[in-house]
Amino acid sequence: MNRLRIPLLLLASLLLVTSCRSHHPVAADNPDATPGSPTAHSQYTLITFSATVDGISVNGQVRWAKDSLIWGSASKMLEVGRALATPDSVWVRSALLGIREAGTYADVQRRIHHHITFAQLQDILASDDIEQRLAELSQRVGHPATVRILRREQVDRLSFPFNK
View 1 (cartoon, one colour):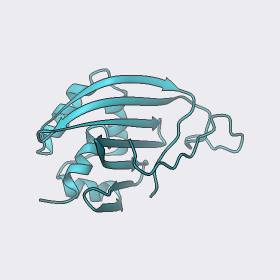
View 2 (tube, helix red, strand yellow):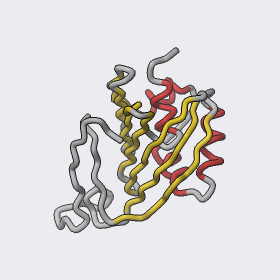
View 3 (cartoon, rainbow, N blue to C red):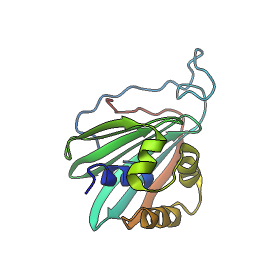
View 4 (cartoon, rainbow, N blue to C red):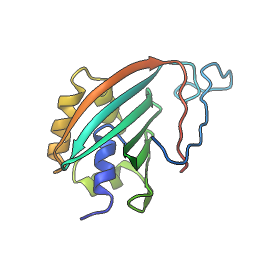
């Protein structure tokens, strides 16, 4: 089985409690920010979820800035993995599974055998029927999952505990 399939599925099913937290606050009022950058003044979305993928239950969070980045993490007592997606690249890291990968959406598509883009991920996260759409996506990539959204909120600031 491909080592990357489950973390990439977690990215696709809400993207992926961090063990080594390194917080980098994103200032919403940074005057040097360019439009579309994570530091530009805008609203961010924070989604907390629980999911079952291939019979394994995980909890996690997804944080995203429209047209800029999507960051996610999943844990089951210990961190299972984390992922960061930008409009042109994806990073996946799982100390538990020994994975530290970076690539493009073409690389992700080859690994999960399904066409996926940043815009599609963003569209799923913004949808009202997110749980249903993630269930359908996970079924199509061959790893049935159920996702339950526990909380979705708009926030002015985010921190991204992610060490690439």
